Length: 121
Image (tube, rainbow, N blue to C red; front, side, top):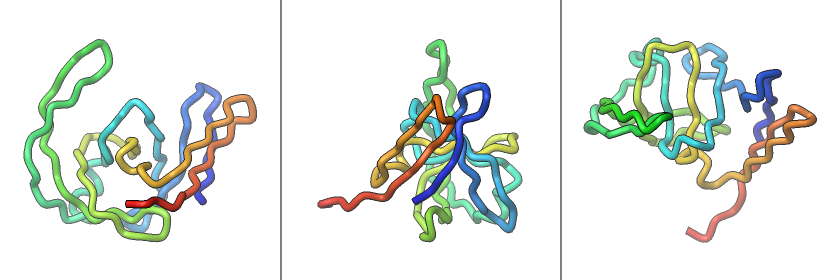
């Protein structure tokens, strides 16, 4: 289980340790990809170019981004996932990473919990 919190602005967050550092990680249920990762982790994660993806942002803005395959540490395991790199200090965790998790966000108590669940596939 991974526990996090909801900021005073209503942003659900967890902390992830990647590359010897703790990273602020926003859990974004509106992002159906796997990850958006800070450029600072590019060397550490040894990305393999995967292709270009079309991302639809807020207000129906669209951008093409380079996508990479990376081995990403998450919940005690290493996962082969698709990621884009951005000039940021924050990791964005999309629903692609949450396929095997129950996400509970309790906004009044400002808590967040990710619980791994058994899957049939």
